[in-house]
Image 1: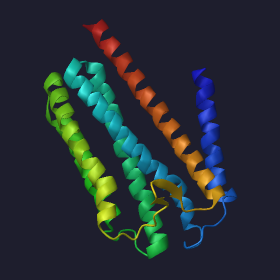
Image 2: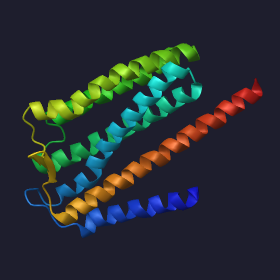
Image 3: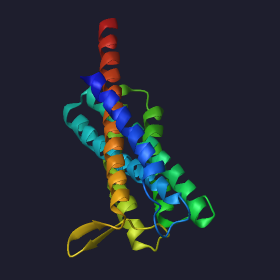
Image 4: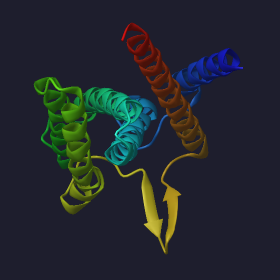
Length: 222
């Protein structure tokens, strides 16, 4: 069953890549095919936010249970969050080069995601700096809670408070959220969001399974 789901995920993501690069029509208001990066950039940013949410939940669980597995879950989620945030930064920089002629413009969205990367990079610096396992896990969990407080501010507030070069793909009118794009573009983007979410779940489950195996091996050796 697990193998079948993995293959299904792979086929789904392959379909998203083909659809995003070949099937989806060109979007008005963008330079050439630069819009196609959005099919990967936006899901990467979404997965980073999702991963940091999982990191928060696992960290709070650790503070309550003091379970080493919860600490492993928190660390795995933070690693994936940092990875996808970095990928979102790279794809965003490529988009900026194609659209505005420079890889980096110190746009509010670019600046806020850079700060977010530094905040969660410090999480791993903290984990590396403390040798004692229980103390490391406790400090990392406490830091994760405070780090998460910055995430909604950096991802959702700053880019909307200050003028940004980034296109706004959605609009909220009379309490209803609508996509500003062709239906086929919207379909590919939603499919990509689903695929990248599945990719995160798969990678996260692998990390947690590995943590369980390593924990069992340590118990056997002791």
